[in-house]
Image 1 (spheres, rainbow, N blue to C red):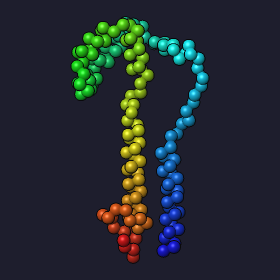
Image 2 (image 1 turned 30 degrees about the vertical axis):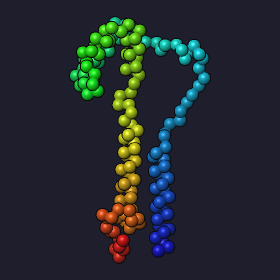
Image 3 (image 1 turned 135 degrees about the vertical axis):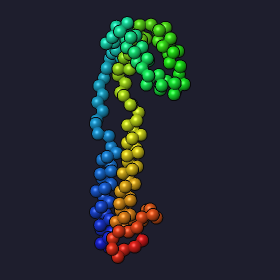
Image 4 (image 1 turned 60 degrees about the horizontal axis):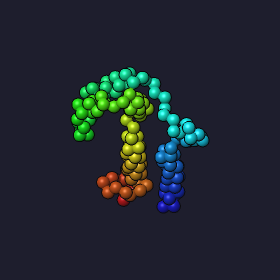
Length: 148
């Protein structure tokens, strides 16, 4: 029985360390001081007024974007009318936000949490099958001569 406890620790400690490294963020954040003028200054637009308006309209007329807008309860035709009513500066700002926003943002955290839960489940299932733990009642011990 003492040998089994030693083996459990030999498996549990490296597994816990690996799980900790998987959960920790990878990159270090960098920060620097900026002046008030830089903070209040609007970012330089890469498109002129008519180009930015055509870009935003092109995105609003895509079928997948219109389907998502309907799902969210927004009328696509009303959105197009509102973009027509915007000034060039406002349309450039919207185009800049579209360009700077990452595709699929916000799903990484959810996928990371789901992945971590699945990993923990698989590790516990494996340790149950190897008779190192007794977490799940539906598993059977696969080691000869041992039973739960």
